[in-house]
Length: 125
Image 1 (tube, helix red, strand yellow):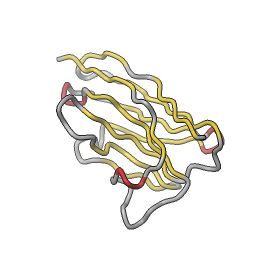
Image 2: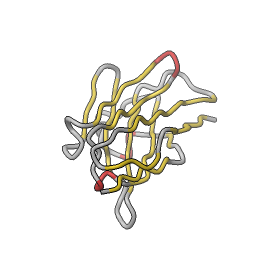
Image 3: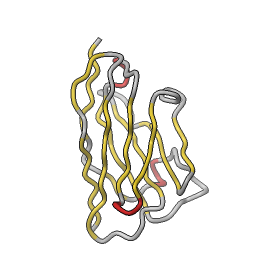
Image 4: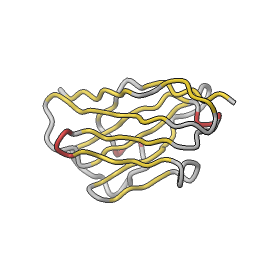
């Protein structure tokens, strides 16, 4: 059983920063693919950022403001969020998988087998 546990969410003013963390535990081999998605009220879950080995990919809406990084030894992925905007308000979900499904790509929900419970990020104007 694999578990993903997110932390670091909270309430921040526009222009502020937050750092999310996600640790994988349980029966894990190296998580080849790790990523972040978010879901705002009334909207579908959307891709934010993903990493596959040394490659990273970002949604256009966060490019230049968010940075994904990982500690492979700890099976942990981070999301540094700078210059936050009210439209970044959402529940943020960590996702991971032990294999990369190239036919789907990093931005696809189908690329990730394991999901965390989510952490709320609220950006006030």
